[in-house]
Length: 136
Image 1 (tube, rainbow, N blue to C red):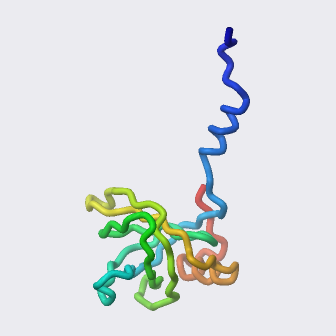
Image 2 (spheres, one colour; image 1 turned 180 degrees about the vertical axis):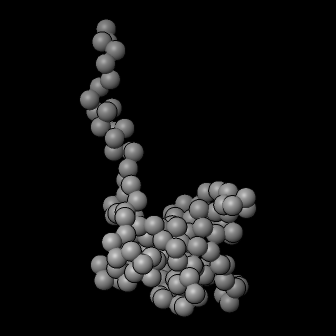
Image 3 (cartoon, rainbow, N blue to C red; image 1 turned 180 degrees about the horizontal axis):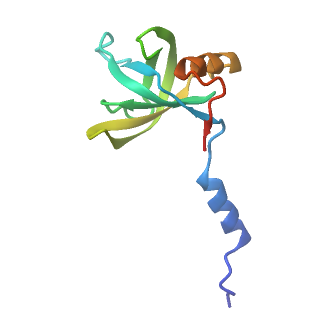
């Protein structure tokens, strides 16, 4: 007969499934322009960077990209200055509403991780705060 107490391994699996991120994420105010490798190579979809980490980036876009899609993302400052162009692979896309508009939250893994120096440069452009607070 079972005692009604959850097994220890079940507790561990619940905790492990709660958070799988390998890097700290930082909120961002950067703009972005995304291109896929399809026929419309010159077409770009504007968006906003929600957050960045050493290994990934979260984007708010009006266009849905399927998981696995390779993208080229141009990171831009709020004044439109091009900062860096990165290659990413879409990990997930889910619908969200932003200021009353339907959008997509697109989570991407970087093809090449940012260096500590690169992430600091991005964070400096993101906000005047020299020590941005990580997202929990």
